[in-house]
Amino acid sequence: MRDEAEAVAVQLRLRERVVTDAPLGRAPRLVAGVDVAYAEGSDLVAGAVVVLELDTLAVVETVTAIGVAGFPYVPGLLAFREIPVLEEALSKLTVTPDLLVCDGYGIAHPRRFGLASHLGVVTGIAAFGVGKTAFIGTHGQVGADRGSWAPLVDGDEIVGRVLRTQKNVKPVFVSPGHLIDVEGSAEITLRLSPKYRLPETTRHADSACRAALKAVTG
DNA sequence: GCGACAG
DNA sequence: ATCTTGTCGC
Image 1: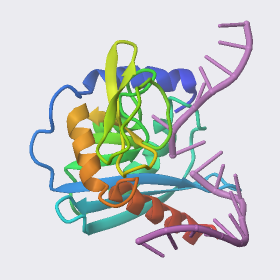
Image 2 (image 1 turned 90 degrees about the horizontal axis):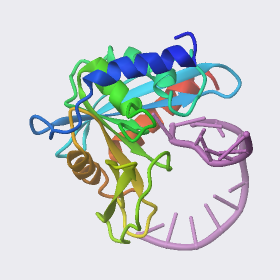
Image 3 (image 1 turned 120 degrees about the vertical axis):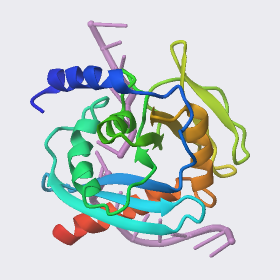
Image 4 (image 1 turned 90 degrees about the vertical axis):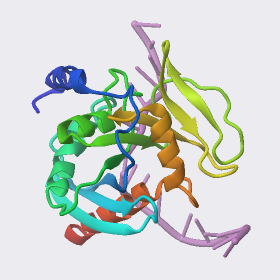
């Protein structure tokens, strides 16, 4: 990827293939968390994919990959920074997940094509994103109970859901990426977060990519 | 025009 | 994202 203009052009082209207005095709069994860790002194990055069995939340497989950040962090273009190393890690999997859970956003994005949408389209696997902080959109107050939520609205579109995964704990931002809708993304996020604020998938992926980075850095 | 801005 | 200690709670 050369520059921002080219990246935006690529997004607009890939966006034509995004599907988020229909529920997940079949009941997911294997759900994978994906995440990337960055080094401070170098441009090394580590990506991880951890596959869990949705019913038991047991880890089925963990793979990691090391790479070089080939694109700067630009809000709205995060995918170009994280997808290369994630695809490298995904290629090492011996099982095929039914769903990918990303750190970040799906269609709740300036051009409706965030990391989760991008990864979903290039892999052909259903995907959605769970963000920890606000990016775009507005929303009303969310009840204090676990499971409470409010629609995430941008313009005249509902692009996601602000969901409380734990009682009295800051909510997370859920948005579909590809081959799944808002409702399904939120429902699965809640199932993946029985005890902590973040889904077990992202918790596992986060620790895995950090460990992988630390192994090559220090 | 001026900020804000996933990770 | 990453830099960082102690501290409150289960």
